[in-house]
Image (cartoon, rainbow, N blue to C red; front, top):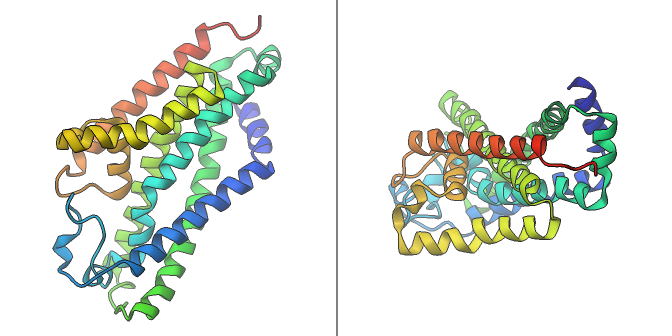
Length: 265
């Protein structure tokens, strides 16, 4: 497992990984800029429900305002990671490199654990970088929009910021597990990416429009709820528990497929 971790960590130094980390940082900056640019006057209570998707200016001046843009953009971060993970292992199947890996390392599950460990290590660092860049962007945008930042540096604000980071980390980890499981089950890069995008993009939101409670049950919406800290409609504890169950189910399905299906023939 340790050897697999080191090997996969070395492979993640590729330019494509750097590009993905850069895209994550860019998404955080864009989300923060838009959060401040589109904010209008209104009570803070208007934000956090299905009818209040964008925060008012008054919400940006609260202890949560420093990383509000980072939190709101976490849904797109999760989708990006889902698509990347859906493509990564499926690409190795398509190129045949995974056969060579398993001829040298027959312990498939250990290899997968090491690979996911390396990926999540990169994710932790990348999210810290995106978090810091987003906070710096928020400070700049607050000056432009005239938002009072006096409450941003209190103990309560720093605790909230740490909690928001952990929520985003848990939510994006769930997206990563789902994407990896999808690639292990389908083994086709194009099909895995298309299914991941179609399901978590338009399809789940179409279902949500017809059935508002879908936000509490569909996996992509549940993972997004975890990342954003929940809403007044769905809460937080319910999505967190269900999201963990979904992640365990996806991981089990992926591991079972990897362990039992032939890849060396």
